[in-house]
Length: 437
Image (spheres, rainbow, N blue to C red):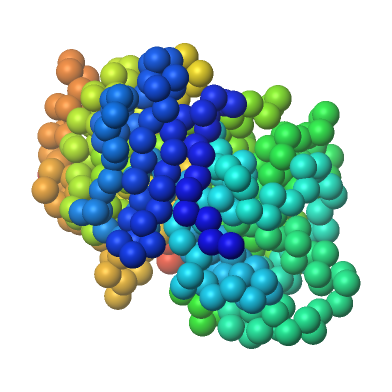
């Protein structure tokens, strides 16, 4: 049976109803009166609390927002998660084209990043955290990347062993809720490095993490080259040296692989959830249009959310790091704000901050978000001009701290096991000495 309605909840409180129009391929949302009375704004800039208002956004890019209000589309899985859902649909004998955006939210159910939950959940799965065998999950994730069609055909044809089916079930549960193109999973991990499934509250002694599989993307458009986790880990150390807020990061060694892990900022140690929205959702800032959104516009969003001055300085610090560290993948899905149960918004910790450059790429040959009207060839004058977004702010100490941190790339990269030729190649792309101080 096709589901076309979802009940949206936040921290156990019903928020509203989402109804899918299959003919128009668009979703309509209305807040419940009791939620409006509570005063919590889940999407203050695009979907403010309003009695009797039905929100629908036919003008948003369907390839990005999937016909949904942006604050709800943020809960959808991205490329790798959708590949897993498509494989599950094949096993169920369901055409993926018939599986609506609302049904994808219902498949995510209570496992979405952030705090929004969707009922009635489809394929709710286990409500217990169980041990995870990492090697088998890595093998399956690599298979999804290398040949998605073969993977789904083998799955739907039943030519799998009981061990493979168990691993697939685990991957469906923990690999479909996280966003981004890279293959990843939500896990629970303790100080000894024991790993359990992380789609439910973590057992005592375990905390919530996001694990990015170190698998070669091969010919797939998903993912990154084998060994990228080492690069991202080295960058995470530079990020912290630059004074940027980021959760704890680790490398998990598994045979010759090194999987990058980062603590989830949308969960407390006790498993309580924070409501999280990307800049892409908050401002209807389409992340697939390089240069269409600027860092200056990002500051405007922070002001409209009434974020603290410290958050604005933090946002500036990340901009400088992205420039000097050559992170050209600085699009609007890679910045978020979080809201607690009192309704207060803060800038979320940094994530997906790593070297990202390819000269022949339409995406990462230059920066995704513009700075002073430019996407490349920045000068110190450009950085100082954007600093005017913050009143009575001297950017020089921030710029200098970031530069000193990124200068340490070679030693941190070597310690993380990055190959020498890769270290040198990345160093050549880091513009530490911008023109015209």
